[in-house]
Amino acid sequence: MEIDKIKIGNRIKMLRKELKLTQEELALKLGLKGKSSIANYEKGSITPSDDIKLQMSKLFHCSIDYLMGISSTRNTQEVDLEHLDIAFATGIRGLNKENQKIAKNIIEGLLAKQKNEEKPKGEK
Image 1 (cartoon, rainbow, N blue to C red):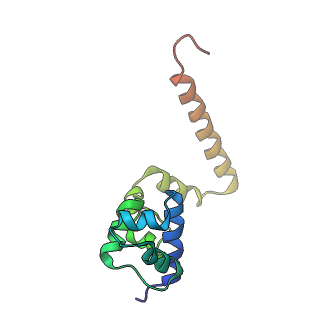
Image 2 (spheres, one colour):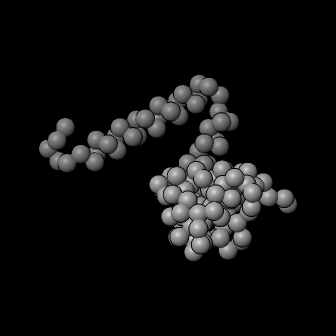
Image 3 (cartoon, one colour):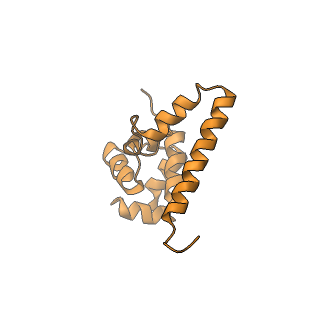
């Protein structure tokens, strides 16, 4: 599989800026000699080594697939197919519009009930 250097470069730049790091600061954190490597990664001139990609994924709290632009899921550990949100979202799409509206009303009612139950005693 060929690596899309532009995608990985854009992703590195986005993640670096998200952490408010300069190219030089990121280079230092990765043990690189200067900001030129980071600039070249971001331009797509060169691709980081596997070791650097691993260090970046740890620093940016993302999967290597996300870093490389292969996946839009930032951290695969955050996505569990057994998770209720995903199961619900998948299941609700199969409902007709009327039943989707009923499901939405039920959820809103449960959220309101929960919010009311979480209020300190004596507060209404």
